[in-house]
Length: 194
Image (cartoon, rainbow, N blue to C red; front, side, top):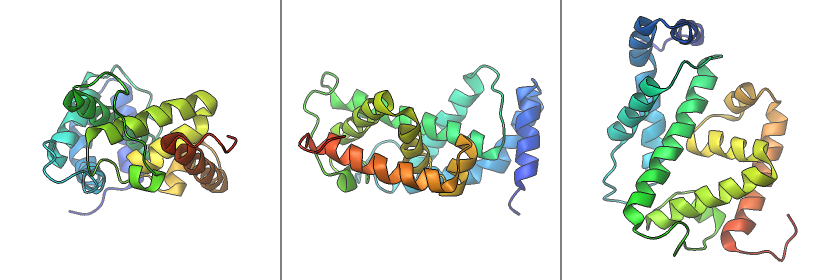
């Protein structure tokens, strides 16, 4: 099946935004494969034996999209950015449900590179990354959003720049600074200034 053009997807997204439910029905087959690939890339970093499968993650994203009120979709990149947020929420919720501990309780401190491979060991690592991202958002929302789009959404630098309406250079600068900040936050190293 040929890859749908970005314009085709954007056109369907805008029609769906206007209330055309048939546009969503036509959109799903066009974006499903890419959503599945993004979810598969993300789930490949999960611990072996993870009970949430790639297809289940994509299906949960679909269900949440259907239940969302009308969204003013800008373009294909905006759509995948929203899907990235949904995947993050689903995985964090799933990790919390499996954790059986109070929020943040028992969360392990670990190096950012290890944390960003997301949860080879336990759900507490996903929660630790999520908490660190929430803390970053309180300090600098844009940098937090860059991490969410690039890491959880699998968006490229260019796609992230398009969604956020900033330059690719700014995305790279924010990405680098956010990784450094998150490393300090997750490792508990407060000796370095933020």
